[in-house]
Amino acid sequence: MDSFGSLQSLRSPRLRSGDRVRIVAPACPPSREGVARGVELLTSWGLRAEVGEHVFDQWGYMAGRDEDRVCDLNSAFRDPGVRAVLAAMGGKGTYRIVDDLDTDALRRDPKPVVGFSDITHLHIALWARCRLSCLHGPFPDDSWCGPASADAVRRALMTTAPVTIHRDTSQASAAVTVEGTATGVLVGGNLDAIRTEAGAGLPNLKGAILFLEHQRGTGLGEADRALTQLTRTGALDGLHGVALGQFIGFDQDADDPTLGGWGIADVLRDRLTRLGVPVLGGLPAGHGPHPPTIPLGTEATIDTAAGTLTVQPAVT
Image (cartoon, rainbow, N blue to C red; front, side):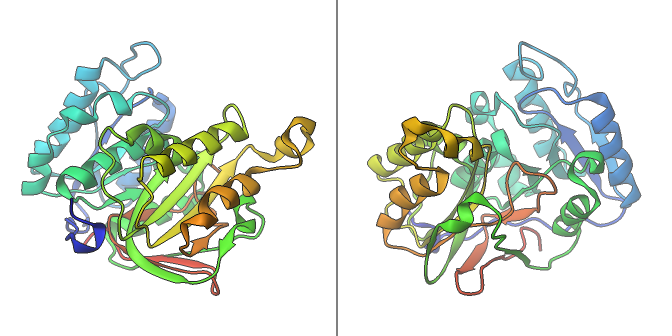
């Protein structure tokens, strides 16, 4: 299997005023109010925002049946007038539809896909199957993500400037560092999503920079299990480096006497430092407020001395 270093990224043209963009819901159903705010903001950038047919459907905890959610995605991929696809919500369910994506359409006509959290499944599948560069970023509802974060989505879609994220020492993962610099194609996102794709579509990560972020569910054990599974399957073999974002909700573990004084930084340090590659912790990217937008599937460099992750644009 080809390594990341030997593969050419598939990048799409940057957006321009007048371009059409399509809002979809591959996972959970969004609120109508949030989508309306996003449409208003996208329109203010000069874009023509459309909403997928099934975005407000509901089937259990998902935004409609599997076949309807993937239909919205494939319809956007196949429409030559749609120049970007934005996920209105993460949550649960994207993993159920990734096998049915029309990646041939994206090979013919690449367009960026924006999202994070459960949308990591899309990002991984699109890189693995057609090398598409995507964007790890929020839906631009600035009542939730804030004006600066919304503007970061705009710049990532409409300019070709590299993106630099600086270490924030207040983040839990900032305590985890293996000194050095490393360059490789950036891949990753939500740790649980990446673990779920192991053995089910996760590409060879040899030569990559792996970006990880996570939101606490059941506790330290879930992060430990995920990282251990990725190690045992060999998925982390050959990485060039690791970039750690936010690990939200683990503060409460510091007061749990059953954990032996360990916190999330201890788990990350124990599992990742043995890889023998540079590790940069403390990036303010993930499930916290005011998230940045980070290109995936393009060349990136981590520099632990400078405390920076610098990523080439996902658009040309």
